[in-house]
Length: 406
Image (tube, rainbow, N blue to C red; front, side):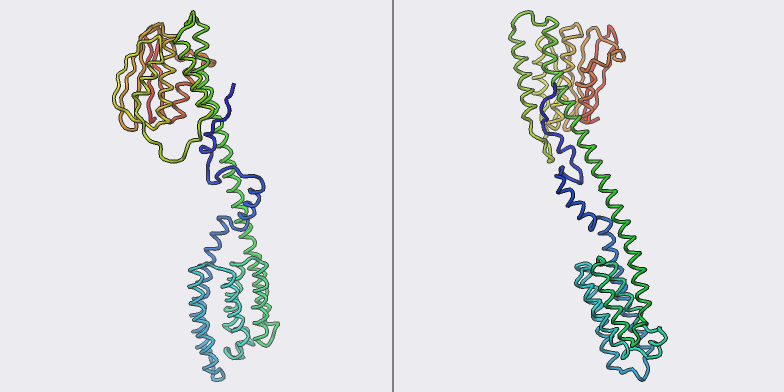
């Protein structure tokens, strides 16, 4: 018999992926990850710093080279105005990228600025340098192409690079001189495609790993929920039926009615239990819960030795359930009508010993089919983050010790 699911699976299964999503939502998320996964985002941030370095470093270096390489045929006004504009644009470019990242607008604007300089390069660079392809305008055009290929998707980067290549060819007066830029565009585009493909594969592997982990956690939480339901069934209905079958209640008894009523309330509480919240869990006093557990052992005289102890409410419930099962075991199997419950602890921790001086048993000889100790005591405490130990031997009584935290 398995009760309807009571709700704890969802909080326990939460991971970085959150709740289970419909397939359509997961597909849309997968498409977003393909183009904006963690690796891709890291690559984009790195490209931003690289672009800032290229533009600022290039502006300083190429301005110095342009001044040193200038000849009498180069007008000072023609040289000064474009180089000043290049330096001002480079400073603005760095500030903009630092503030907003490598947006398509600023990257394409950079391509327009460099293309404009390339178109007027005959007024900035000596003709002999242009003829020998040793002009400083060539590496400056390369920086714009690199930035575009790193920052933009191919559908924008390749047309932008083509504009720079054409502007350089037209500005040099010999369009064929732009062949080197074409080669560099193809090589860099291929390298960037390989890098982005590797980043996308890495993101896909990480996403699949996280999804698998989420599914495993959900399955573990579901199984833990089922185990807890089995424990509750064992501690309530099955325990009461076992006592009836053993003749503990030979005729109608108020104690039997009270116990059955308690069992019913426990099962109803399971069915309507709300999902656990992820917030802080308040501490609760253990004493009243222990007193109720002792009072429910109708055929036992339970001596309580208590000190003030407070535990998180879910933990206190699990610990008291373990104590209740231990007392029921004393009733059914120990052959004595007396037990002692000793509590030590304080705020946030507790150690409880349930002791009887009955017939005892050999814990190692307990058959696997007996779930009372293995699940309702040891398993329950382990699931709550605590610990349980049973010390017993034939003729020497039994001591069950439960503690939290472990």
